[in-house]
Length: 205
Length: 87
Image 1 (cartoon, rainbow over the protein chains, first blue to last red):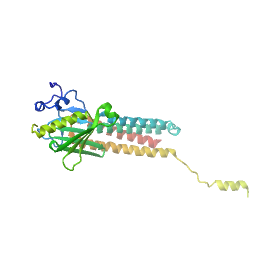
Image 2 (cartoon, chains in turn brown, orange):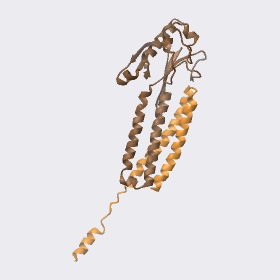
Image 3 (cartoon, chains in turn yellow, blue):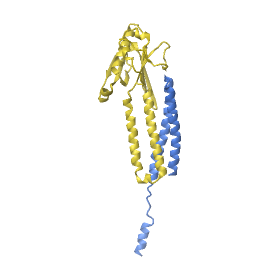
Image 4 (cartoon, rainbow over the protein chains, first blue to last red):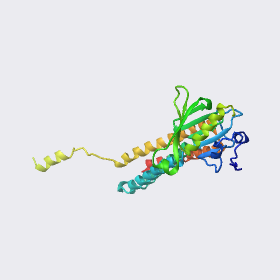
């Protein structure tokens, strides 16, 4: 199959491998599934290391933040209806400012969580960066040669509708497995990883 | 003794229970405003660390968003505090 020329053109190094994974890396690039991103770096990236794919959690998993915001606005509107609040303009204005600031914080938190919950696949390793809360984040990585098994699970209605799932990467040793949570196209990502592992074992990359 | 005097003596010193609902509503407002400011500051500091860990061309947008959020939260909280105190 001919490789399409596009913004995320597959580098010659990977095209020459003749593996099926290159087919998954063609087509439209989005913030959720970004093949061969340019000007992207991370701590510990080697000079000759190529970033193959950057994946983020599917946007549907962040829709709950909009529901929380909607709930807060409804509660605030109900409180404004109470006579003791509505009769005091200063208290009413202050309550709405508190409500707007809280909603803004929730939306910004959702955006930052989406942006920094990032999974990176390079030709050397896989990296899982998790923004767990405003007070903590975690980063796990595994070199390709240490990966023993890759499994994906698609459970629930949302996974069927939006083709999202969780990828489990089991590494050698007692270290906990790496999880790519609720990513789009988990089967394709699994195939990409298997092809990369095979190429790595053969010493092609 | 006049019965009215007896009733007066019973009622005059009765302590009045003054339940201030305004004050009760101000407390959660103070707590939420303080929590919002702290949260915005913590988010800003966390993003500063994460932008070094993972750098992409869009990091500038994220930094701008978080800085605007911090600024709006601080200004908004101060205005809200003023209104709470005035109410």
